[in-house]
Length: 305
Image (tube, rainbow, N blue to C red; front, side):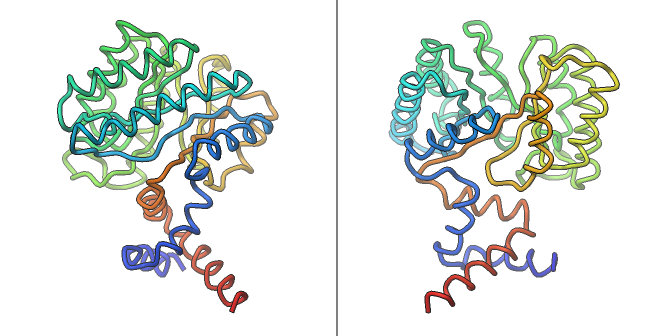
């Protein structure tokens, strides 16, 4: 079945958008801001915290940055109008022109963080492929000179990540640790899941052992169980870590017990018009889901016929 699912994923560029739309229903909150807010409200009611993520990345012109910039301002305004919501936001710097001009991006990002600071909103700078890792971390470090409610992301599959984590520890940074999803050459990134998993463990333990705040962002049940046991055995305080997951990934059976035990669990909630590219990427990350999506898609169409 796994081989068939991977074959299906390889053919996804030829698939109808309606088929990929079946994936989108699972992995995104919707297209509109209102749908994103409603999803956060539902998650909060179940004990989860949220992070809202406006879909889109890799903008190639200054003019294109105006749309996501406006959307982030609208998002911050809406969160401010709903103080009962327990959510932060996540920003990809290539949405703000990082690949065009770093200073230009910095000025756009400052606008967002200045606005967010008015309502004490936590903003995490998301991480993208290795071509922008250094620039992203530089902007994060620069942000710490002006703001407090800022977080960074480190990807465990990058070979450079231990050095980056040590630097962030010195800065007292709130770090989201994830595996990483981009295709990178072997001299930059580990190529096997076992190597990435082991590096994830080493990075996470180093950060926790030295008092850093760690967001453990993974759907790997082995890693979740590993860190849950490690944290308990070491007596690491609950205020020093949280668990994170992406909306729609089927790990609720392991996250709900954490919530019931009083642990902090945060769900990333993507929404927006750029759902197609995001949903396609989710399929590539988890080919086993493809088989279920295909089955449900053809079953529902057969019933309508």
